Image (cartoon, rainbow, N blue to C red; front, side):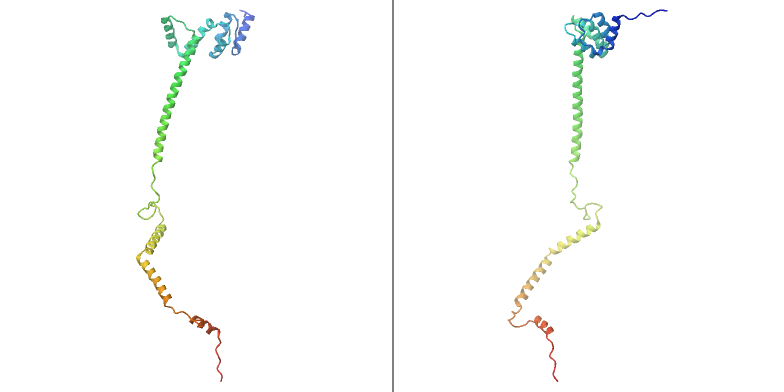
Length: 225
């Protein structure tokens, strides 16, 4: 039976650091072989935070292979091989952290351009739809004041309203006719003539109307036998 070896104090420290890797910052003078065991458990953000928090020490000899792995996961194996071949052809070497950041920036710019294009296309299509709606709304509807052949505003007009409108129209035309005007003029002339021909009553003389009223009030004189 194989007995398990008890973990050393260093191993316990490494396990504790891995469990709390999200809280790591400046690793200071931590031995490289310990960082080789701890940092592979970091995410992209955690590893970037540790690199930028550590002052006075270049961690790229330890983290460069980790950033290359992140690059390969994010942008693909073929893209990673292409970058390696170009650096070999140009005989230059870049840190994979810088390559990862540059690629992310380039991808973000392309994404923003694509989003702007989509937004412009959406706006253009929306403006086209709005312009079509405006043209439909600006169509002048038929005026409600226009009358149909039967005198109403539509096929469902009320018959009583039609008769009333016809009577009013006929009455107005009758009152404006020449016959009515001539008849009114004749009546006015006759009134003026009768007024001029009536005699002027002298003072003290009772008119026929006054005589009638007096005869009603005066008692008849009885005869004496």
